[in-house]
Image 1 (cartoon, helix red, strand yellow):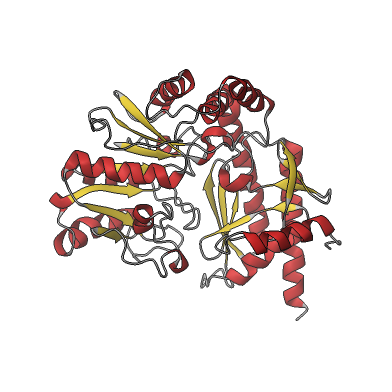
Image 2 (cartoon, one colour):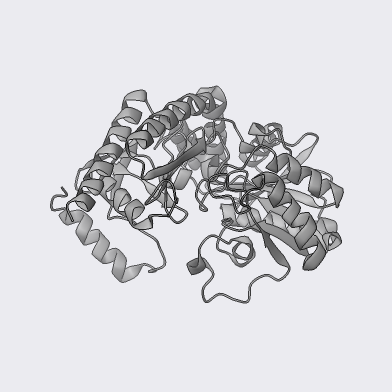
Length: 437
């Protein structure tokens, strides 16, 4: 059980008095320091980190190679806006990204500070290039909370409540969920594509007005949903048929998280534009929008960003890519296969774990009251996340009733095993508490 935590309690009280109440803290963890996959709170308690700052610290906390790169750049200069000036770290990182993104042919990079900014840049570029006004996104999608990104987002009502009117011209389609097929009795991937072509295009959304379809290759906040294998290739074919751009939001799936550098590589599908952030710089604020060079032809002043591509963040990004290309992506594939197998073994013993899904170290466990009816059990999910914290494990939820497992790509085997054991202990505690009622 939790012991008295005086410093944590003091800081949380000060936080409540001074910070926006819109933040979504699940439990009272106040971080003091982190190293690799271990973190300590201000009262000295140690935790295993299976949250990684929402899939950001892909190389673990404060990896020495990244820290050294940050220190070296900080000693040279901290800022000289790439909007108006030139500097090597930004150019070098753009070159690296252009060589890595899953888009054949020449590409160009626009740097941002976050995933939402990357999505906003993608929307503007798509409209500018196509001269078309509309977009198609998906139910349960999360693309950010700024107005353009929020207009695409369809994850939770609270994210939209009170902020209308949003960006006009956005239509939503159904994302194919193999566990909860929105088209019962039909192939979910094919049915999702048919819905766009034979419903949206014939009712509310003229295809010749659609600038782009934007999609997460694996839905993140929507519940870590992996689509059927025919969906993304079919979406590429559909976009090409109607001259529509295809935007992949790889903010959460990118940079090794799924056991490949980018999730698109699992299906061999190329987007026209890709939005990136989170794991790009091991925790430094950085994002990027990368597009085919023949699309990114907008003129000077059409879009800009004071802090995007900050030199210190770019240095961290370059060091992060060194590590990812040096073996961390392969580590994620191996560790992810082991973690998923262990979670599926647990699901056989604890059927409330209705579905275990994911790729690499992007794994979701969906909790249900009954494996036959698949009735969601969000209360159980929430209590497990809270109880895991008491057991010294940091987890996060997503969707209505899913827990996500997103440790660092280089998590050592013994810490991965320790984290799994702590998760099981938390699960057993919560289930026992229900049995005792």
